[in-house]
Image (cartoon, rainbow, N blue to C red; front, side, top):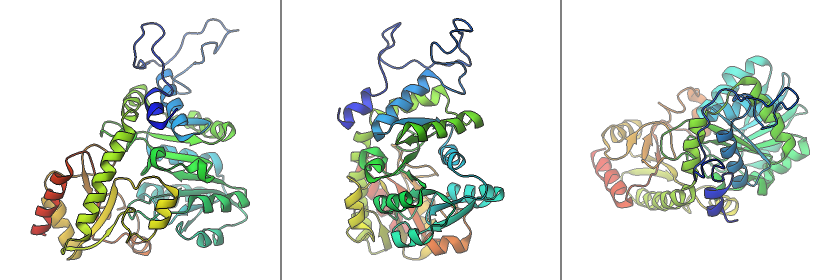
Length: 383
């Protein structure tokens, strides 16, 4: 089946009792067993361990990524956390993309480091830097590409080879491009992580996360952590995400086309200092973005001439674009990472990896492209 067919039909069948075309929301804590000897004969015992609605979403995500197993979580950060707990112990070392979501950075430096786990933040766009960061105790690589918020792209295939030689697991945060545009397993990765809150949901309705594994063995390790920590996705969130997945490709195509038009507009605006979007030929990793993905996504950033003050004025006054965290929704969002999503990253570290104070991040939605550009034009005139 093609991707568009899978996003609608994979993992779901009409309800055998009523014929309902949508998977029911199995809002239940527990499941009555036939007998002690037939415990788990129906496949479920307690909804922390498994739920039919959640299982349908997990099956769909597994097929969309081309993996072998999936575990879903209450948030994207729970998915990242579970991945680290599944493959890291005290004394182990992990290599993380030097540009990563602020929550991932906080988890590594403020939480897991307290338990004797070491982290190195390496430049994923330079495989040599990643290779030089490998230690005897390196057990996990986590690559976020394109990275939040700078959009830096990392070479998934090259890092997968480095991880394989080190005997480590390579996880890719595939949130920004989704399996519709980027196929981590085909590039050698072991795990694909998502904040399903973003493009999988697509409607600002839920928070959730998922880890898709390339082998059943890896999947069992992640699911063990999911069950042990109880960081599960609810049936209602799974049901809503199932509906969002059905339009993923259509949304991504339109949002990405708008993002390209907006990036080109901003690149030629006399009040814009710089623009970063993987689809622009001026993008530092443009060739890599073309090689390892089939689309460029709907995320970009720019800096207004006048720096932080001008950027804040634009964000405070712009119409149509909503000033909010999150991304990947049908509504277009504008964000100031230094104040919002990456506020917990130390100033020196932000500067080191290129998260400048004047960076304005855009998540392009499904509004008419002309209206989005017009709103930016008016805000830029006032900046």
